[in-house]
Length: 276
Image (cartoon, rainbow, N blue to C red; front, side, top):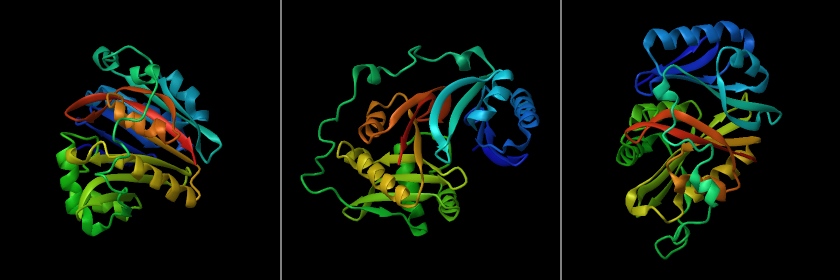
């Protein structure tokens, strides 16, 4: 899997799995030197893209260095400073979107609820519960069944345990005592935002509204914690997952071209946000 390390105070993921450098958390103290380091890393290792999540005031430095703006989340940082999702491409192939539309087709057509998404096995929606470290083995097995590949090693219990100990909040829905669906809220306390991520529902339980129930629960929990902005990075190809966020009051922020290793290949992703 790809390496996560701290460079000049910023958290960076890079490697051949996603074929990219991802600036996950940006230390604004020395942006010009960091930009040079990331460029040199991408060239030296032959990565196809640099993807960065940055505050709006840093945009001019990245724009000058050849980045393009792919998505904007208003008030991402502290509810006051906009967040820019920017990319720099190192090959024509990586920059060429499989579909040239700027907005996914499902947005042009409008989003409606999918059949049966609130019809949970003829009964009331099962309750959402917080995952515990002791659930990691079962969680990893669920992720392994749902995703052929993923940007982070969520199929590995050791990774999930580390994430939980570092403060990532995982939630699940159980049916007959077994996990049927999972999702996570990855909270950035310094930025006062949360990424709603790692949604997975086992095939036999899809169409029951579990992803929406998990998202609504996490919206409420993080709101109670005082988090101001929630966002997600979802598969552009997954109309149903995009619909879950749209139906939960999220706004479309943009599209990340050929950005992430997921479901067996590099795919484009959509960004959605909501002020909690």
